[in-house]
View 1 (tube, helix red, strand yellow):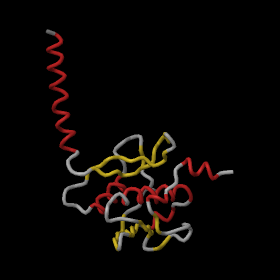
View 2 (view 1 turned 180 degrees about the vertical axis):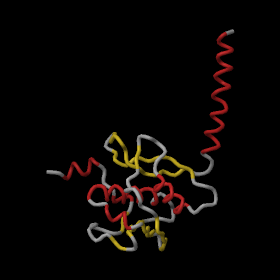
View 3 (view 1 turned 60 degrees about the vertical axis):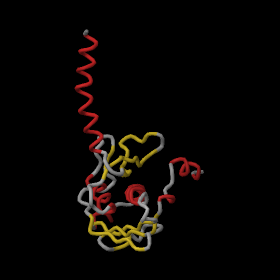
View 4 (view 1 turned 180 degrees about the horizontal axis):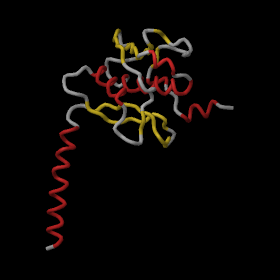
Length: 164
């Protein structure tokens, strides 16, 4: 008898929760890339599955999610505080994303990780082949290339293989 009551209680608790999860994941789920607090399996950027608000442009929505930050406590934003989206434009498969001037404060590995969180997130869209990122309308001249694709991103294994 105790098993039946326990089973019914467990069902009563889990059944509504399953309904909530299903409702929250309606529509396509996109991978939004954030920094890992603890680099696991050689991954610095880790995807977090997110649904987009219905009727919103996918590029705009994904950029908003990136700037809002992750839901998981194990992930963190790759952007410095105060970075905002000034605008974006999609032309011939290349999306140019213009962030506020605060983005230009990034350099080195931090810039690379921020860049590729945007690139990996946006390049999963069928309409996006490459990404260019500007800060306050200006290209970052200290970046070695301006147009980036998801296939440009290096894994830790590739970086370590190139080190002497």
